[in-house]
Image (cartoon, rainbow, N blue to C red):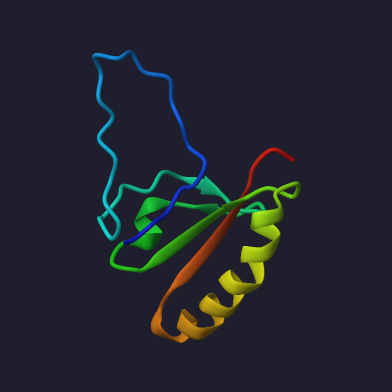
Length: 90
């Protein structure tokens, strides 16, 4: 399972080091409420490629990326790729 989360940050002391996942690494997916109200649970994604797309309505970069995300989903959906979208900062 691959996932990408953009815009996540945390406040940490200088003595702490945040270990970030590498591109393509397997991540533990939390329960995510999708825009249609359904809840995507980790057990539903076992062994599947899942792309989680974080976006905001006010973000110009998100507006540019959204059509590309849709194209990728259409291209890989037949191969079992699932997509979830998460709106932030309504």
